[in-house]
Structures are given as structure tokens and as C-alpha cells.
Length: 157
Image (cartoon, rainbow, N blue to C red):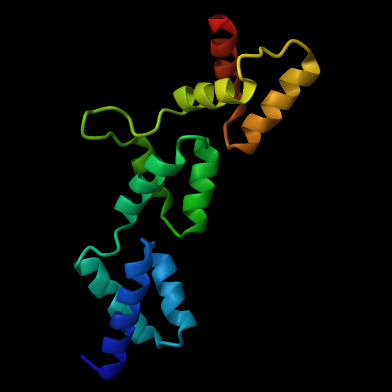
């Protein structure tokens, strides 16, 4: 192991000690620090060997913590921006927790977010409904999911 590789791995560990990052984020950070491609590749592969960097686990954790008020489209976009492969994202969105429950149920999340946004007030006018739709689209929910959530919330009242 060359001195450059050792320094790159130490820099990777320093980045990883602060927070969890994706493989792409770690690679970018090491390049920013001025390491050569060979050393960056070595450090990232070594971090993967020790499972310090695991994009699958990162995606699952991200969905657990950020899926509370975001739609599938927004989650996919944010994970893609972080450099996670589309296949891994789809797998994580379809995955289950230890109890066999889906990690992310978009219809249920949309209804929860809509209930919270409306605070018990059912939109009566088209203007109010449009405002609620825009809010939900901004959160990353698709139109079909929003329509189901609106129907669900309306039928509760």
C-alpha cells in the first residue's frame, strides 16, 4: 500500500466519521481533497470491504428517515442526486422492515401528509383543492396518489 493510498483511506475514514455518505459522495470528497484516481478507487473499495460505505443500506435508512413527508418521486430524485443507482432505489422503496411491513407505502404517507396539511379542514372550493394538490406535488407525490389521498381524507370526514 502506497503512502498516497493510506492517506486517501484515512481521509475517507475522516469523512465517514462525520456522517454516512454514498459511494459517489465519498469519491467526490476524495477528489476534492486532491487525491489521484488510483488512490480514490483504493480508498472507496477498502471502505466498501469494511462495509463503511453501503449504498443499499444508505437508501433504506434515507427512506426510513425522509419518507415521512416525501413522495416516491422526490425520494428517487434525492437519492439519484446522491449517486445511488436506480435499481438500488427501486429495491429500497419496495423493501420491508424486520416486521415484514413495507418500508415505504406511498399511498399511506400521502394521506398522512395531506391530513397534517389540511389540519381537519376539508377543501371545499376548487381553489383550496388546487392549493392542496400543489402542496402534495411539491412534496413529490404523483397525481394518482394525491387523488387517492384526497378521496381517503374526504371519506373520513
